[in-house]
Image (cartoon, rainbow, N blue to C red; front, top):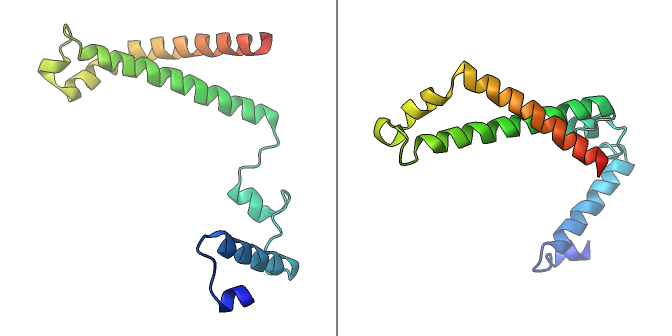
Length: 125
């Protein structure tokens, strides 16, 4: 407790160490979770996913969504090129112009092909 009476060092290390000791003491006394991976409190804070299939599905969704985002951002940039009507008609018009069913189908198909190709290359190399 000497450090607390005389104040903490100028840096945050002393404070962090004191808080760490106090939290360790609270865990030993049963006043808080120990922080092990099996603790429910830790599972709620940290997404602890032991299901590999679920992890693969989330990864596929994130990667295909990113490819779709790139597709639409490329279309939107094209609307504002020299020959595009986006400069004259504005951003709202350009967004309405690119958000069509046909563009969405193209984006999804391209994203799935891109995901399959990247997964194949990832497995191969």
